[in-house]
Length: 76
Image: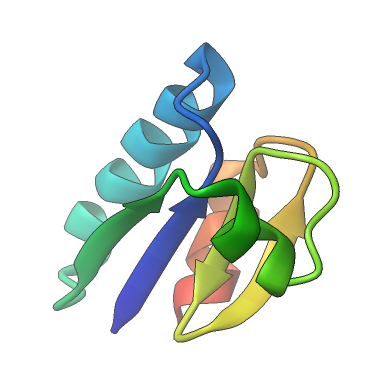
């Protein structure tokens, strides 16, 4: 599974990455975490607000940090 954190590296982006890693670790998911910081690449996803979370190339959340329950749902 490829998990992408879309954002320029702000504190919220880092917090989202930590939350995703924690949930994925609890679930025992085999994943690759990629931080996408290039604005053109972020915009290619259609994302206008960061942080955003994409799973296998599909944007699942944008402009906020989802709850652990939501992250779990996105990863299952």
